[in-house]
Image (cartoon, rainbow, N blue to C red):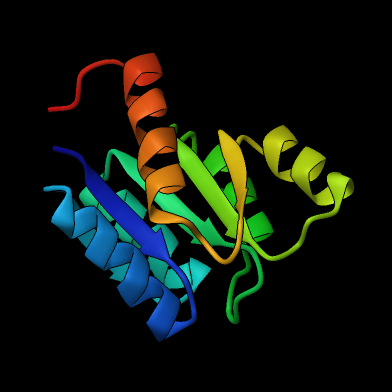
Length: 124
């Protein structure tokens, strides 16, 4: 299955997402902020990134900007409690594939990953 990098400052949320992904045979990498997550994305080249927006060190917006600047084309799913349309528009403009609202729902996340896998092609 896929290798997925979770970038989330809440240990509880990160652990909850990881559990759902691991239960569905995905390999999981974890980072507690965007700066660490960016380094891990460069080093490990995961198939997908799931990121929060509001985090210390480097937020999700900065992460998306850095991925774009560095030419890293890993599909990103943003998860946020922010439901504003301007936020959705901004993350999509910065290259995210979608924005899911918190609290996250396991079946929804898995359906999105499945859909992205179909769009992006087979995973190695």
